[in-house]
Length: 118
Image (cartoon, rainbow, N blue to C red; front, side, top):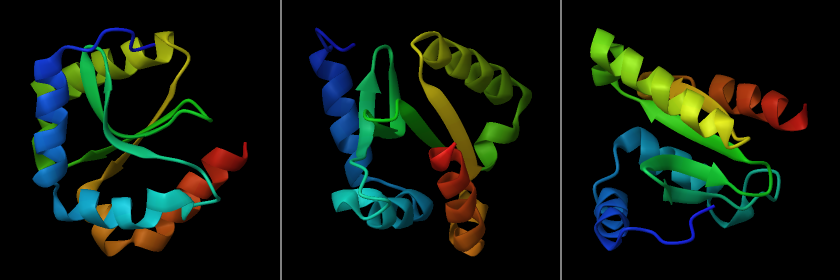
C-alpha cells in the first residue's frame, strides 16, 4: 500500500506522535503492545496521502479520533472524502469523538470490540 512514502509526510506523522491529544494518548495506552484483543495497532500511520490516527493492518481498520474542529462543514466534508478514499482501499474507518474517548471510554471500547468481532 505504501511503497514510497514522502519523507516529509513521515516526519510530520512522527511529530504528530509527539503532540498527541489527551484522547489519542489514552487510546494509544489501550491499543499499544497488542493490549486490545491481541491486535497490533500503529499510531499516526501514513496511508498516502493521509496520516491516520490508528491503524490495524491485520483487520484493515482505521480508527480516527475527532475533536470539535471536526464539526465544521468543511471538516465534515473533508472527513467524508478521506473516509471514502480509505474505503476504496478496502479499509474500514471508525470515528470517535475525543470527549467520548475521555469520558465514556468503556462505551467506545465496547463499540470497537463489537466492530472488530463482526
